[in-house]
Image (cartoon, rainbow, N blue to C red; front, side, top):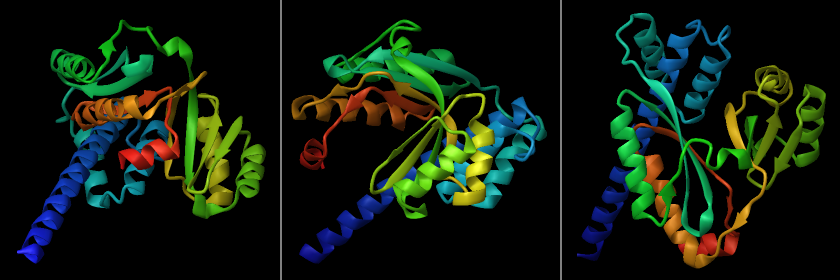
Length: 247
């Protein structure tokens, strides 16, 4: 019985992971299609599309899926998605920005509002929290590309503004205007990035304690699980000790 139960548990976890992976591919495909539809359907000539394709590759999305998403835009049978941003507060006053691509604003707004309300937060008006963030370009690399000094030197040469490194990853920050130029220069030295995108960087971080972290993570997970939501940004800082307790 124990072995059978263990097997069932593994299958359940695998099923959950597969479901999450499928949802992630769906979001990546949507971004690729929108990027291709809004510009030239060639990643080399369309910075947004190139970033979307790179993000898909970083998640091991099959080439056929990527090409299908591009073809969907060029054949004119793609849904009409629009970009929508929502802003609100999570538990303990944490500021949260939600970016979505939707073909039904009412559905998405209802889902986002419900997620906030059920998890200790509330949805605010447009501009409620974004004044506390800076709109920047973000280029992400795994820690395996080199140490902090190597990445910092490459980033300075490429014209980046700032670098944040830890054991697992490197985050290179740029202005919005220079994002793709810096990414191209970094690629010559460090190889292809895991992510190249526009981001919301908070001016001030909010320390989150163990009592608040669980509810906050549930809110973020609920938002990220929504099919229409592409990214969720927040000004929260959770210590490793608190994360270990949650884990």
